[in-house]
Image 1: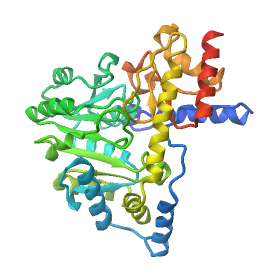
Image 2: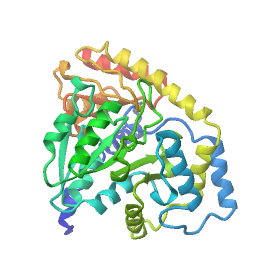
Image 3: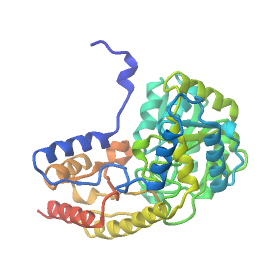
Amino acid sequence: MRLAERMSRLGTETAFEVLARAGELEAEGRDIIHLEIGQPDFDTPDYIKDAAYQALQDGYTGYGPSAGLPEARERYAQYLNETRGTDYEASEVVITPGAKPILFFGILALVDEGDEVIYPNPGFPIYESVTEFVGARAVAAPLREDREFRLDPEELASLVTDRTRMIILNSPHNPTGSMLTMEDLEAIAEVAIENDIWVLSDEPYSKMVYDGEFHSIAEVDGMRDRTILLEGFSKTYAMTGWRLGYAAMPSELADQIAKLQTNSNSCTASFIQIAGMAAYDGPQDESEAMMDAFEERRDVMVEAINTLPGVSCLSPAGAFYVFPNITGTGIDSRELASRCLEEAGVAVLSGTAFGEYGDGYLRLSSANNLENINEAIERIRGLLEG
């Protein structure tokens, strides 16, 4: 089969590949503990499901506007304004089936072939994949353990060229759990403003904060009109399969993003947008309890991981991942991730699944119960001590 050349530049998510391999082992009768996938192990709250069902009964079953239902755009803008202190209007919000389309559409709309996009590395692999796919150059901004995996604004500035068109931020961060401080964001904003660079701020873990205070770069003076602020429902409300995301941006850009949606997805399912409104309007106790559970698991995981031979682990400030340093084991991170699955029955990801600067690390998700997490750590201990 002859494929378009651009397909050779399109990457994937290793998490889904490891999940598939774990499924094969389970089909053979193996007991696998899943710490590889970034998906809450909680169910969507009933009040959100009920709202979706009622919306279906009310006739929200046809095409809707490409940018989203007016009432949903209004409510989502209100949520951002309540949580970020911004002043977005409905016309500046575009709703998409999941958050990934915004990554794709934002880069398609703003980045030309030969342009450069600076992205965090280790980081969500789709950043690099989509950048390379559109014919631009993905420029890795290293996240280092000695800065608690926070982007270094001075190093970022050194990577900027006259071809730099976009900087991608992710805080709280996947895979490291780091979180940018307001001081970090102000310094990054200075770089963006001075060099006329767009920022795509990927913020789906904004409610998963355990230490410190969450801030968005959209809060910084001068950044509102050069930022695409991306949010979603998957993590906060256990709605991964619902595929519901959105972003706020200047209205002129929102019109172009909506045009891209018209040419690809047409629109986001209307009844699901209504469910998203209900998520924000309804009781937050289940979501808050889920966040408390993730914080408890983080504490248990970090303490236990730091007792493993040759392994050390910082305590992440947010998200639901830990990113232990395994260089002391003398085992390559890809090899150790593979052996954890094949020999110990624990599905984890190599840090290299998130870029070259993830070498020497593993990513473990806390999206599993404490009993399984403790069992997983003991299995890994047996592998390292065996």
